[in-house]
Length: 520
Ligand code: MSP
Image 1 (spheres, rainbow, N blue to C red):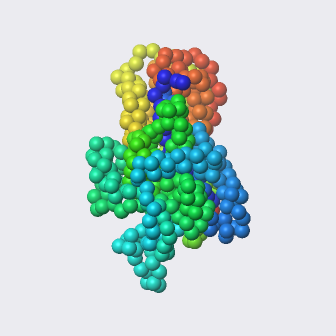
Image 2 (image 1 turned 90 degrees about the vertical axis):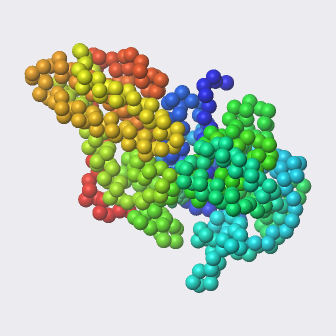
Image 3 (image 1 turned 180 degrees about the vertical axis):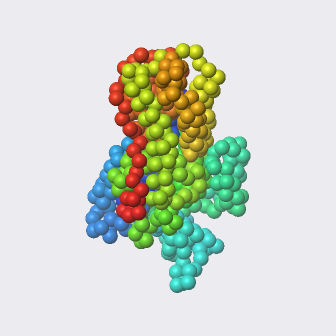
């Protein structure tokens, strides 16, 4: 066991009724960036993702595909693993709710709740939306122009009447409100926190936690006519992967409670209300944070299979490049808000931020070093105030980005980074090393050294967002593999003057705009 601080973060587990699209990719990408950032910053990280395989929605999708649910989930779950490979996600575990370890965890959590009198048997009569796998109160249901009854999410609801176990959620209203008050950063961004608090203040009803009209789920202990409600089953995955039910074990003690559950805004209520209430009721620790991000639309339209505008991450990566897609998704939209995907915006970011700003900086500096310094790391002499100002801005960047990442302000971390890139480009223009080559070659070496050192820091800090491209930039500067963590940023000789460098090669190519007129 390591003495390093730990960080446990999770994505939602994805329903296997569908092929992965950019919405799913987005949640995991955000977690991947945070996981990589934390690892480079010295944390022992456990990064979990996986698939949510039980419930009526998946059972229906399997039936529609004409295969048994297990065979169906095996097939679709594999698509989410393939997505992780495609996107260079660095998850440490991939959980499937059909695994035996999870079955055990759910059974024990149920028993803990039952032993504490938190679950009772009754009859449920109410509205249910299979698409959301959620129950809705009469007051929430609306009727559309065609007389169909819909949940506030737009999902059709059906009337359900069946025997059901209930969780005494209503008893947890005040403890939840007290918990939110004592942990002001439990729910982020703050606007979402306020929404959750008003919802809880409005009063909580007991929650139906079992179903009897289908069987694709984990049976209720001692009453196998019931399967557990799929959200109770799904939320428990976060503990399964942390070693539950072995609460005395080293694994659970190390990893629970989770530091961060990353979720989309549509599933915040499950994570910020039901989940902490269930955990408190079972006398288990509550996670430290739930962050809700926004939703993507496609060229202004809601993304949906029926509209036929689902964006396939494979096609995007093939067209624009992996790190370009990773960068775009996290830079284009303030993390936490809704955003719109458009090919024009993608091309703008690739050619502006990546090719012109960052790519050009590296390319210009490295080729000047190649041509004018014999292809070796330049040898600096005394630094001027302008040199020092840039070096200092680059040095302070880690702290600024760390503060942003710690509050999941991922676009903010990139904005901070691009401020330093802009400062470096301004510095190059002011210092004009191409002129110094003739007038003052020693000064030129100093200027190019300051640039190379700034690029080194930028590339180290860019690794979580664009691991391949940043890695190639560091290769071009001959930064050894063991000098790429944040702790080594300030070590001497990370950039050793006089070291022979490889011939520079462009890292962020321009995207030819004429191709953008015909999006795939
Ligand atoms: N299975 C549940 C989660 C259980 S977690 C204990 C579920 N799955 S999901 O596959 O429907 O959605 C998973 C995630 O994808 C959610 O965080 C959701 O917000 C995200 N997205 C799905 N479509 C999206 C967009 N169009 N835009 C951004 N994210 C979206 O919910």
